[in-house]
Image (cartoon, rainbow, N blue to C red; front, side, top):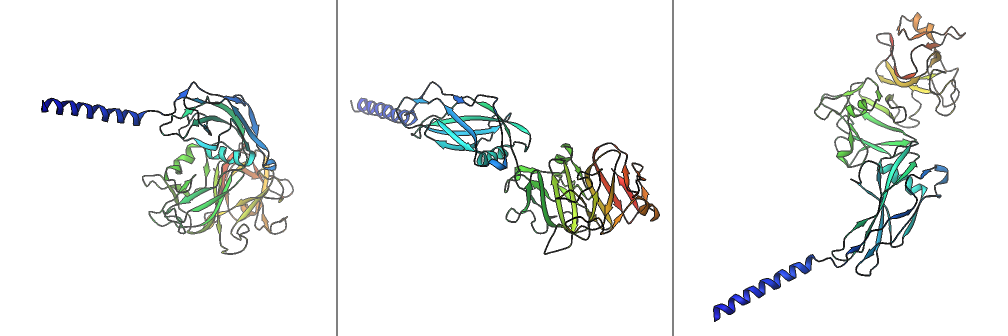
Length: 383
């Protein structure tokens, strides 16, 4: 009899334990049906502007989500770049209402973080996540809509590596590339010591966001010759020019990476005695010194000036030696005959314009090209 009672006790205890475990796994709030975004409709678009930062950029309304247990529902608006299937969703905001409005300033930043291309219409996916916050409640997602967004500005980027003597491979001291309308710049001390390299990163502290030398080559970037593939296993950047301080410019609009030597440690780092300047209709800024119309023709290594820029077919330009921040026509310049008289070998795509000032005329195709003047070997090339 005792054995029978023991057996019954064990069975009852087991059933009780299983019952408790099942209760722990029960959903206290179970979703019923689904919910969906009402406005905007998929395919609508918006153009964001820096001049209207406080204007509404996105106004959403959606139907409510029902759960079996009456409770407050929390909604989180999420976005992702079209085609990424929300692998890394970005939260815009959270509310208990069934509507939300986001202003241009915050929405623009979030779209850039999601991967939208500045000044180009990008498809952004929008969805809403519903949850009750109850123990064991199940999250439910609305339908997904496409929203076509034209962003402005850009996000800062970062660089670390042993070739950057102020940084090294350390996220505590990264070099910051400040972004202005798609053009990223930084001034940093570079070394060409053996075994040194560096890499660009889109997100601070995130090693997986790195972009190495082949990434830019595959994207069609023109890169000055003193920056090469380090061939170090990770294909980082190697700086092969003269060690020193340089301004590096990464232009995501024209897909160029340029360097220009810096010598000043204080004061205006944009006006340097080591740089020459290109002005003329063959260059992006034309015959103008207004704003940043002139093209900096930076010294990338001792005696070598080089720049990647868009050159326009059958147009002219001239090399200027100084820049005082305004019109600098009379601060020294060199035309085509000057280089001929100095014994330079000049690329066949550059000829004497015979325009009264004997400027250079570029006869090659309109394209992003690299112009190089080597004052040591006395060679002028267009690559």
